[in-house]
Image 1: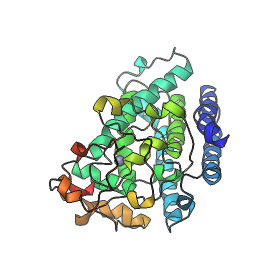
Image 2 (image 1 turned 90 degrees about the horizontal axis):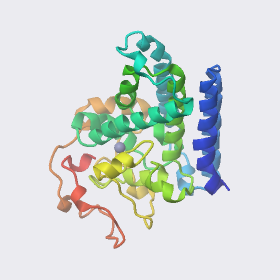
Image 3 (image 1 turned 30 degrees about the vertical axis):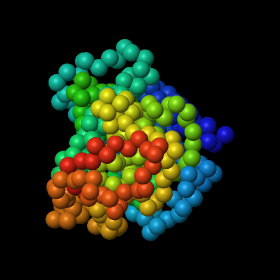
Image 4 (image 1 turned 120 degrees about the vertical axis):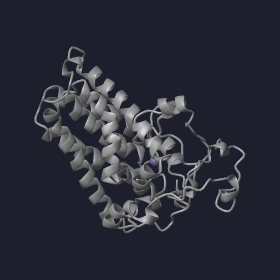
Length: 315
Ligand SMILES: [Zn+2]
């Protein structure tokens, strides 16, 4: 039941409740209550059906990750609260389709935000200055729900701005933004979940954990796949989609091969991107660079060695 019911409960049940609350312009604390239910459910299901029981155990990272979540979730909520202020200076607020059903408005906002966030995410794996800040998120070696908000707040701000700016420019209403913010939080919990849930063929379209584990493989270039936040539509179009049903993951394959000693503490992770060692080596990568670090050849693998990137071992 948890295996098949978890995702529909979160994606349809809790998002549906959030959309209903937002559509009724109910007090925003109801959305916070739904978010609390989502986080509690995420932790519970990870304990009922863990993909890797080891990933449920704190590695002196639990407190740090809670700080990441508190900081980044507060930033998201503050951004939503700032939308009415931004509305005063947007050039064409009358463009927003207020007459559409509220559900359609939210789903459209999700699709537009998904495009901007996905493009910046891909760029963060290709452009050195963005990678410095995104590397915080890729330092994880256990894959669980809170990883979604385990990122540098500057990087989250750039990513979210790219997703939401086009919507704000056409007059995104704050109620739609509230439902979108909840949907982002729920998506991040599901995308990085340690729960061994099943979604059938939807895994080829929705950017959930089965596909996202490939994104966290530690080898340069090999993890440059499945960039989508909500959907994998853009990955299919950009030819960055990768999936292999036979693949199993463990901690030795996650993180960053070139930065196994990435700083662990919250403050050090905030500062590291600004330091000399926080960036890329910018040296070209060839398959030969990876022969000692790559996993054993897997005949069923769909990894594409031609995806090895030009940003060296730092990706
Ligand atoms: Zn990434």
